[in-house]
Image 1: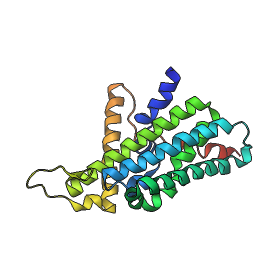
Image 2: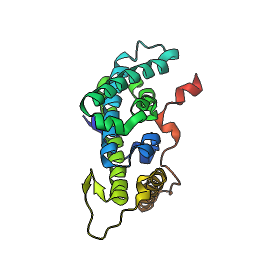
Image 3: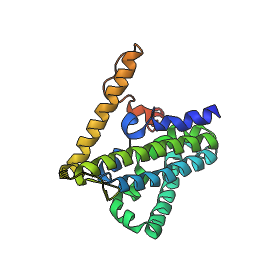
Image 4: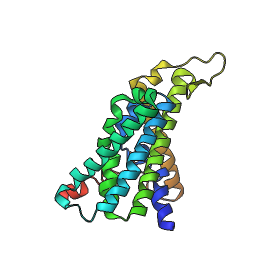
Length: 225
């Protein structure tokens, strides 16, 4: 149980995908102009990431090493098609809002990174815990960033007016440049808080993200192949 909780909880803060691993930034920047969009994209990623981790873990011992990446992508692509069809059937307005970024989930580096770094090396229960934790952490990040941009840029939260009389929305925040500014401010706050924590513990401060790109594991085997 301790191992399951450890693998699940790391995605909620320690390895929070967009802010600690700095992975999956394309949808983070592109679809977070509202909280609804962030939540919808996050839930789609939770579905694909959790099930792809499970399926890859189940077949990890029968997939030849040389074709493993192609197999991982085929599994992820099948799940993304399922998500796309479900969105068209039950959440068509959200599907229209997210646009091309729904099919692009298949090449999201979080999906392939967790498949290569974790699911292909661990049993199904641990793979589910890893995918679910990372997916929920990703969803929380997108929803928070979307809520921040929507509030500052439109004066709304989840489409509902949430401001006071005299509040002037800053439309720049819901435009593409506003996404970079918002993400940069949040990354700065995360790094500042991390450095304060490390300073209190007598550790050396870090510069930039607390993990390098090797944390995703996608390129580790490719370099050694």
